[in-house]
Image (cartoon, rainbow, N blue to C red; front, side, top):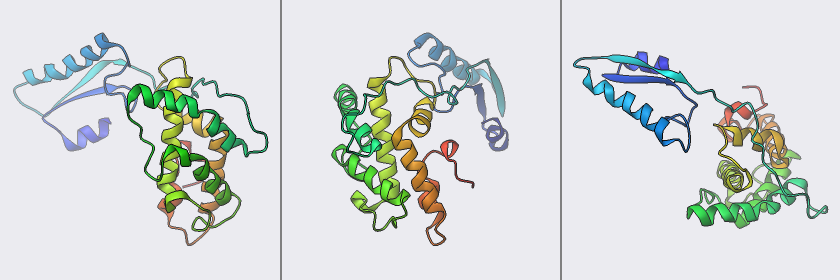
Length: 213
């Protein structure tokens, strides 16, 4: 953030128009990443500061476009679409975890509890108090993060390419059945006066929310 650099005035700073979360610009491109790093290391040659240098390249943020991600077709029409969807991508989630050897799911409960977490958010969207919705672990924010992590990790095996910055978020919250559930739950919670604002405001990334701040 250029404004933050200018206000904090560090001794040396490289300002680069690169997508948030990708400080080296391009995934799986070692030569380009080295180019960014060497531009930063070159600032060590400056004898005094503060120094602010602009990196010459611009890498566009593709977050506005959803990830092209093939979700398995509905399997059990008797289940809520979001629960059926989550169960359908479990194999993809498992492949990613097996490949990476680690998962970010587990802030509330395990991946086995994702359907129950989604069911709790369905209840919230239908007007049930978040305290009585049956949320595994009892923490709505932890449950929301587990859903996000579960879908992010499944997407790594479902997609046939490295996604653009924040494209996975756009896919989750704009294209999937669980995204509709999360929007409904956030809206329902935001309309209850005595629910602390952070409990609903941070249920999803701020750039994906439809609720007025």
